[in-house]
Length: 297
Image (cartoon, rainbow, N blue to C red; front, side):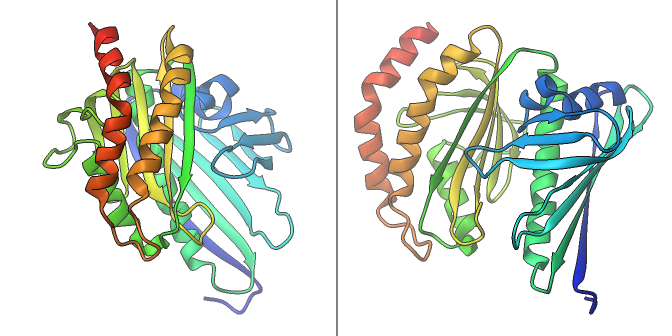
């Protein structure tokens, strides 16, 4: 640490992606491209241009200014701090590699008055590492397709320290016990029906690439969005001509299931009677699952 009151915390994340720098640039700097895999971003091209990130329901929208603009290799922006909030600068560096791939690096810098921001900076770094996984899956499998978001957040009373326990509960509820990254999955009858391939399976973050109910990416995490208590967060993107209709149908099913599932987690993170909660969810959703099965046929 330093005695400078404007303490600077920097995290770096990178991932190789099978895509051209132009494709990555399209995905991170255009409204249509960004909304297809992450928060929708309205970006005014050029240094000094305005940036608006739409983060609902996970947090308030963010206004920022472009600090670097060198298509298709370097894009940066600096969020406008309000009140006691820290200033956060984000920069994407895109470097071409052989055989049609590139390396995407994200450098996140947190500027804050005083001390005690290390945990926040670490969370930013973790968030970007997971976000890059979603970007890779989108560009590999769904680049350019029409997309619709299915985003929801289910708050809990559990502390951030219980994230792994809650993550295990969610993964088990999705039928992922005993499975590994790259394997096929199919959710059980009591969960929202989905089937496809596991893209990533971590302690508190799961990324699923679905083929049913339509082509989709489901990024499901147990994280603290306010730094105080955990929430289970679903950031899904559905693709294809039926995406809007499927999202409207599936959103309440996901919310109902997660609400029942997490109702068994105590204030200290202990899982209480989770099996009973899952069964109640199953009883309440039997008819919907039967209809989904008929739709699939």
